[in-house]
View 1 (cartoon, rainbow, N blue to C red):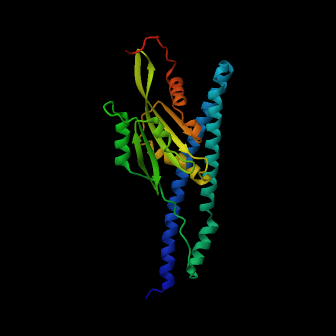
View 2: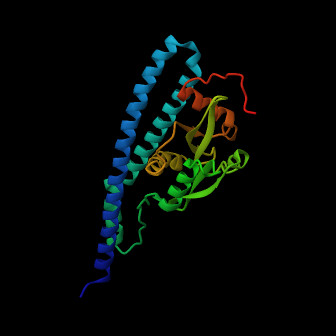
View 3: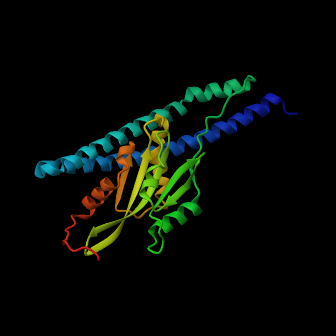
Length: 253
């Protein structure tokens, strides 16, 4: 006959096994972030060379420096979080506590999921020339990312992002001069100023997940302030990514 303590012990051993799987996943994420950080460092070095040659590129270099700092902060936070969760001492104490009859809580971290059907439908809707939809916004519902809104009015798009939220945006913008109009696409990551440090750290991983579907865009921006959600700034970023546009002075009748 099994004693109650033995059943409780096996239950919590199972929880610790789940925790171990979670820790392995976190270290996989950290490895990807290290690779990303290496790429950013390489790009940063290239930008420093450009800065010496082209003084007018300082604004872009400052933006790259900001991105580099954000990635370093994210990586540091994730390393700290993984280290805290994977402490061998905690595991031993958790087993001993359960075996003694005390309650203990699981530290399993939920992996972010996707509402793939609605996200893909919104993505294709924005990309379709036959559709009036020019933007889609994706937000978190619990541990899932879903399409929360889509539309054609940029003013409405700006209202979708609050200071307490994390979100993603996908936009179609008309670019080019009077004789050569074309559509370009932009991917936006939003991290409100009131978002916690831990959720900021998770954003890099969550972004990689949604980009499995939203994969086609000319420019990617990460914004943290409402004033940065500006259509002129977006078009300026797209112009810089795709080269200058030269107007002809001839307008459509």
